[in-house]
Length: 96
Image (cartoon, rainbow, N blue to C red; front, top):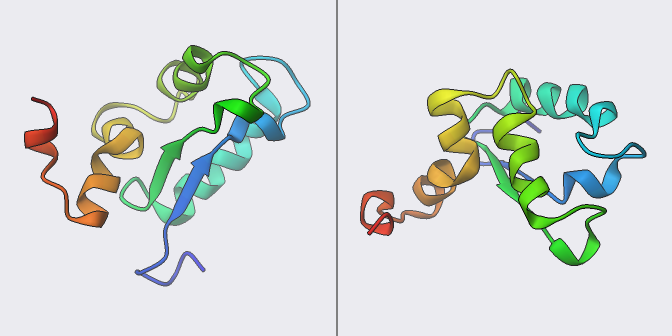
């Protein structure tokens, strides 16, 4: 599916699928493979806090602090900028 340019993946609720506590090391490699396949412009962060085995803060910091391969502009894309681009929102105006 990653070969199709009109297909993206939403990494919503990733901690829910881990059998380990924060920082959920046993799912980090799988997320990295998804990232490698889809890229930062087609992988979107999200969470369903009602299903998480951790706090909302940990849902965020799992991506922003615990994935060493996700940094800089790629991190900004995954954490929201790419989704804004995907749906046509002007992310510059979202910042306020």
